[in-house]
Image (cartoon, rainbow, N blue to C red; front, top):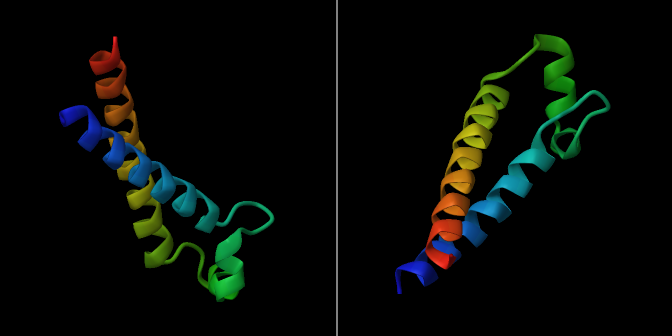
Length: 76
Protein backbone atom coordinates (compact mmCIF):
# COMPACT_ATOMS: atom_id res chain seq x y z
CA UNK A 1 0.00 0.00 0.00
CA UNK A 2 2.83 2.40 0.84
CA UNK A 3 4.55 1.61 -2.45
CA UNK A 4 1.39 2.47 -4.37
CA UNK A 5 1.11 5.83 -2.63
CA UNK A 6 4.76 6.62 -3.33
CA UNK A 7 4.29 5.67 -7.00
CA UNK A 8 1.31 8.04 -7.28
CA UNK A 9 3.31 10.87 -5.66
CA UNK A 10 6.27 10.08 -7.92
CA UNK A 11 4.16 10.29 -11.08
CA UNK A 12 2.54 13.57 -10.00
CA UNK A 13 5.89 15.09 -9.05
CA UNK A 14 7.45 14.01 -12.34
CA UNK A 15 4.65 15.69 -14.31
CA UNK A 16 5.04 18.86 -12.23
CA UNK A 17 8.78 18.81 -12.78
CA UNK A 18 8.31 18.54 -16.54
CA UNK A 19 5.84 21.43 -16.46
CA UNK A 20 8.11 23.66 -14.35
CA UNK A 21 11.14 22.99 -16.56
CA UNK A 22 9.18 23.79 -19.71
CA UNK A 23 7.89 27.02 -18.18
CA UNK A 24 11.40 28.26 -17.40
CA UNK A 25 12.84 30.65 -19.95
CA UNK A 26 16.22 29.65 -21.23
CA UNK A 27 18.57 31.43 -23.61
CA UNK A 28 16.13 31.31 -26.50
CA UNK A 29 13.04 31.62 -24.33
CA UNK A 30 10.75 28.93 -23.09
CA UNK A 31 7.06 28.34 -22.94
CA UNK A 32 6.83 31.22 -20.49
CA UNK A 33 7.37 33.59 -23.43
CA UNK A 34 4.05 32.42 -24.83
CA UNK A 35 2.30 33.80 -21.75
CA UNK A 36 3.98 37.20 -21.83
CA UNK A 37 6.97 36.35 -19.66
CA UNK A 38 9.51 37.27 -22.32
CA UNK A 39 8.68 40.97 -22.41
CA UNK A 40 8.87 41.26 -18.62
CA UNK A 41 12.23 39.55 -18.32
CA UNK A 42 13.91 41.62 -21.01
CA UNK A 43 12.93 44.83 -19.23
CA UNK A 44 13.40 44.04 -15.57
CA UNK A 45 15.81 41.11 -15.36
CA UNK A 46 14.59 38.36 -13.09
CA UNK A 47 11.11 38.77 -11.78
CA UNK A 48 9.49 37.44 -8.64
CA UNK A 49 7.64 34.88 -10.75
CA UNK A 50 10.90 33.50 -12.13
CA UNK A 51 12.44 33.29 -8.68
CA UNK A 52 9.40 31.45 -7.36
CA UNK A 53 9.47 29.15 -10.39
CA UNK A 54 13.13 28.42 -9.68
CA UNK A 55 12.31 27.58 -6.06
CA UNK A 56 9.41 25.35 -7.06
CA UNK A 57 11.59 23.56 -9.60
CA UNK A 58 14.28 22.86 -7.00
CA UNK A 59 11.76 21.67 -4.40
CA UNK A 60 10.04 19.45 -6.96
CA UNK A 61 13.40 18.06 -8.05
CA UNK A 62 14.32 17.20 -4.46
CA UNK A 63 10.95 15.49 -3.89
CA UNK A 64 11.42 13.58 -7.17
CA UNK A 65 14.87 12.42 -6.06
CA UNK A 66 13.55 11.35 -2.65
CA UNK A 67 10.66 9.37 -4.13
CA UNK A 68 13.06 7.74 -6.59
CA UNK A 69 15.30 6.62 -3.73
CA UNK A 70 12.33 5.38 -1.67
CA UNK A 71 11.00 3.41 -4.64
CA UNK A 72 14.38 1.89 -5.42
CA UNK A 73 14.78 0.77 -1.79
CA UNK A 74 11.21 -0.57 -1.55
CA UNK A 75 11.34 -2.56 -4.79
CA UNK A 76 14.67 -4.29 -4.17
